[in-house]
Each structure stands twice: as C-alpha cells, then as structure tokens.
Image 1: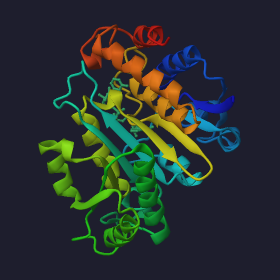
Image 2: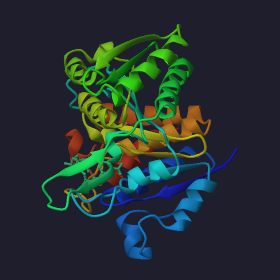
Image 3: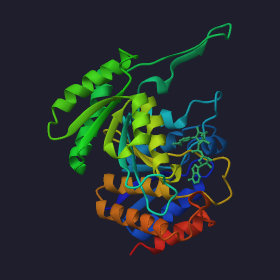
Length: 335
Ligand SMILES: NC(=O)c1ccc[n+]([C@@H]2O[C@H](COP(=O)([O-])OP(=O)(O)OC[C@H]3O[C@@H](n4cnc5c(N)ncnc54)[C@H](O)[C@@H]3O)[C@@H](O)[C@H]2O)c1
C-alpha cells in the first residue's frame, strides 16, 4: 500500500541530509509519496510564519512526517519549533534507539538501548517561564499529569512486548522531586505490574548516567520523563559513536514525526559533510511505523554494511567524503 509522507527539510544541515535520505528511500522503492513543506527559520523567511498552516495541515492529513533538524535560538528568541510540534500534535512518546555499529569510533561494543522519553510535559516545557520585573529571578513551572505518565510508560512496555525486549528500566528523581517525579514513578510501578513477562527495575537519573557509562549492557529499554530522557538519549548516542547515528520517533495517537536526534549543526552547515545516517535511521523507524518492516531492515542493513566497510564515510566517522557520496554508497547496497 502506498503512503504519503510530509517532508520538512529543516535548517542548517537539514536539506543536505534530507536529500541523501530521500534518494535512499527512492532506491528502496517502498511506494512512498512525498509532500515537502517548511517549518522553522526557512519557513519564517518564506512565509513569515515558523509553522505555516499548510505544514500543519499536511502533517495532520498524511501518514507520517520526516523532519530535518530545526534551529532554536539559545537563551532568547522564539520557542523551539520541535517542542511546539510535539505539543500541537500531542506526540507523547519520543522513542530513541541506539545500537553499536561496527566500524565507528564507539567506545563500547554491542550496546542496544531504546530510550522512551515523555515528550509533552515536565521541566523541558518551561511552562509559564518568566523573569521577575527586576530581572533578578527566573522561574518556570514543572507540570506532570497522571495521564501523561501512564501513557508513555504503557507505550514503553507495549513496545518492549512487541519487539521481544526483555527489560524496562524506569528512570526518575523521586527522592528529590517527590511530587512531579514521584507521581511518574508511582504510575510506572502500577503499569509495570501489568506486564509480569517483562522484567523491570527503578533507577535514579544520576545513578543511571553513571551506570550507562560503567555497564551499558545492563540496559534494554529505558522509560523516563522529558528532560531526563533528552539528556540520557544523548548520552546513549555517545556510547555508540555519536549523534550522527541516533534517530528519534515522536509518536502520538494520530500523527508521528521521525527525525535525527541531532540538531542543525550550524558549524558544518553548507559544507556537504554532514552524516546522513541518523536521519536515514529515522526514516527506517518511519518505515516500521508504516508497516514496512522488511524495507526498514534493508535500509538498516545497508547503513551498517557501508559503515563497517568504511565506504565513503563522512568526517565525523573518520572518513573524508561528502554527504552525497556517503548516501550513494549506502544506496548502492540496497538490492
Ligand atoms: N530535533 C531537532 O530539530 C534539534 C535537536 C537538537 C538541537 N536542535 C537545534 O540545533 C541547533 C544546533 O544545536 P547544537 O549545536 O547544540 O547541536 P547539534 O546536534 O546541531 O551539533 C552538535 C555537534 O554535533 C555535530 N553534528 C550534529 N549532527 C551531525 C551530523 N549529522 N553529522 C556530523 N556531525 C554532526 C555538529 O557539527 C556539532 O559539532 C540549535 O538551534 C538547537 O536548538 C534541533
């Protein structure tokens, strides 16, 4: 069955890695139709809006969205478009898998961890953020709801069940944030009891970071709240060789947006040297979501084989080739 996909090329390196990803999807011949729309800085330049209505309408109507990274000004300016998209479409589960790829500079072998991060609540949203009138105090609210906690934890256990994963680690800070994180833990414990076939354990977030560095193989699926999941998933990306290999899926009940975990990389934008693999792996997650698991497997296999052979790899992986050349080498391995 053919599917329609909204494509948002994004800012910085976004258009470069999107071109390489679309070329690989073309080669896979998975019957996808693409509708290109803008969001972020490029949309602002072209339409005067950060998230144009046409982009919103397309995401709502199509089967999935593949999105390049979007720039957010640091410490000032507009609120993150990524955060707004997640909230507008209620994309409550942010799924971020990492898997060691032979041939990279990863410090660990055989790491295979999926972080499921709550995506719509918590400290990350900076609700009601403001300075006091004298500018001496900055405040923002941290809000969690039982519904929000329950649905993301259930998503993690259901995903673990479907994928044949063995263990879910519930990561929190309920010793200090007794209400906001405490409620997450309470709800997570209740849901864990409904899945006796899946082992579960509880860890405090700071200990989790140390454990991930000391012994990452003890982890299988991690479920946690928004800000902790943001940080932990980048740590996990570091375990397997960096952000160039880490994809993310933002899943809601009706819409889903697939992307790379990394940002718009302004330091290398326009040079044609960005690694396209994270976005390609995001596209593989999208294919799985659209029921094309075999095509997703083919794409992952082609990416892994190209990196293992160190064939036309980009500078971040220790090579000297361009995004387009790397993309072509991956495409050539798709049979
Ligand atoms: N999902 C998203 O759209 C998203 C995620 C994170 C950051 N951002 C935004 O991106 C902008 C830049 O953020 P940042 O510099 O903190 O993080 P970044 O992920 O853009 O870059 C961090 C470092 O990793 C490198 N890098 C990232 N992706 C790479 C790739 N594909 N190939 C090779 N090297 C790569 C960059 O060159 C840089 O040195 C900010 O505006 C931030 O808000 C967007």
